[in-house]
Amino acid sequence: MSSAKVRGNPRPHSPFDRLAVVFADPLRLKIVSELFLREMSSSGFARAYGTGSPSRVARHFSRLEEYGWIRFVRYQPSGGRGRPEKLYRAAQLAIFEEETWAQLPLSMREEFSWRIFHQFGERVEEALQAKTFDARPDRHFTWEPLVVDEAGRSAVLRVVTELFRAVLEEQADARIRMHYSHEVPIHATAGLGGFDSPIGRRRGADLLLPPVSALPVPAIDEKTFTARFARVFNSDVNLKIMTELSLRKMSPSQFAEEFHHCDANIRWRFELLRGFGWLQRVEELSGGDRHGGRESFYRATSPAIADTHSWSRLSANDQAEGSWRIFTQLAEQVQEAFRARTFDARPDRHLTWIHLELDQLGWDKVIAAARQCFEDVRQEQMRSKARLRESGDEPVLVVAYISIFESPPPCWRGSS
Image 1 (cartoon, rainbow, N blue to C red):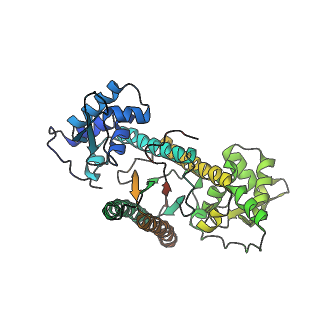
Image 2: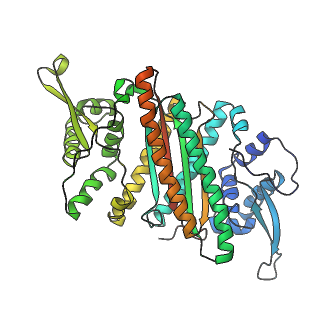
Image 3: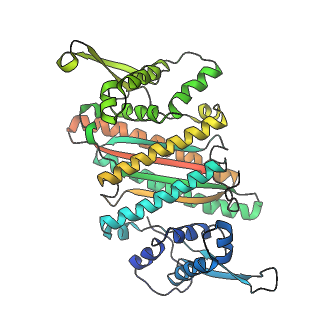
């Protein structure tokens, strides 16, 4: 994806030199991200974020200015007899152009990618601490492993990249509208990703099976409704069961062996999730090593994804706990891909996050675009599976995640 040209007249440097400077220290990434939103002085940044001595922060500011990442915009009186403070803005985000990213060695791509995802994780944690993450019931936070062919993989990454560009355009439009309306901005974070995940033991025809028809869920009271969702989103193990069984059929003993859990405990969890309509028994086998017994296999009736209406009915504590568990499961998928070295194996993967300032119209349009993107990638998986059943080609496993949530304002720091 292309980034805007840097304004001013910075000293000329190669793209690799400039990117090496901004990614050399996590603090520099944070400076560029925050100064893309507002003007700040080095001393003001040090006071706001508690990132060490003002002199250390000033050295980072100086280095970033030298390489054109930030630029001086004006002086601000200090409020006393001290010297005026120099205020800076970032002219662009620290985003790689596709051509530059493709030329980097794999080890360097992996290092940069991990720093980008780590910073996104900090934004999630900060929003959960400030209780803004789930403050808006229509916030969007989904991720899903997708079984696709090569054409489907390209389509998924293209859709996610187009959403990122749409978000940037919407922020620009919102700023123009807010300039005239003086509407108080909504601070938000958008985090988007699409990357190759290792298939591992998931290989086989099960990956190409169509979705299981969801069992009809009878009318339930509010207490039972809350329990149904809490059973999934408030348990790491249950979320993992739902993730894996959305991809393939598994028996409790198979899951317990593969993911190193107690067999009896996993059997109980499978039956619990089946009772709440999350799992469906699809096959029973006997013979072989089963010693005369029968082994039941299950699949998820739907991915562990709550629609806006369902999520808004959960308590604030259940929402916060569920959101954090969803993120930690996503982080596990990212770590698994890094360990298998599939995350950056191909340079067209997508990994971005950006802090947004939106008006209400901008928020609504970004959320609508995120929902449409999520539906588009799921539809692409269905088309890919149909093509794979005909072609017999090897499937590819791609993880796509889409998150739009409210963030605390820049002045908030760790308050309870």
